[in-house]
Length: 110
Image 1 (cartoon, rainbow, N blue to C red):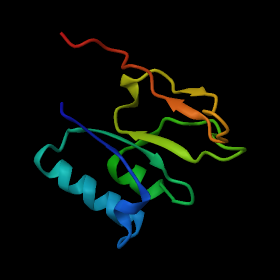
Image 2 (cartoon, rainbow, N blue to C red):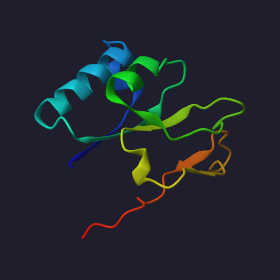
Image 3 (cartoon, rainbow, N blue to C red):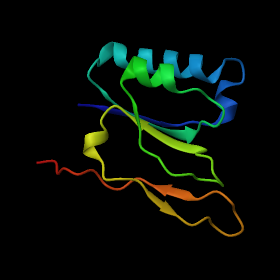
Image 4 (tube, rainbow, N blue to C red):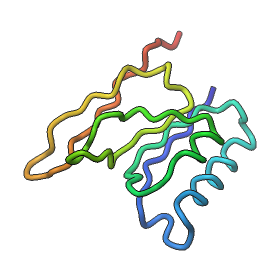
């Protein structure tokens, strides 16, 4: 099963809404490989991920706040069973956003 991954930056979607951009991006990737794995990471603050998660069967892996009481950084996947729970690490330097560490998959390739 191929795994598609992307680290999203705000500049990549200047002309489109983020939800529209992500929907088109994932639709194109899954055209050739409908059963492909998806792993998206980025800052999705103020974005309603409900429709995107429903359409592509994505699950949120970050459940604890990453800044104050808010979850700003998020990891989305359609294969959550393959990963250990996300670990939260302290901010770097004077930063105020915690770092999120996605642990290695729970399986071994033969």
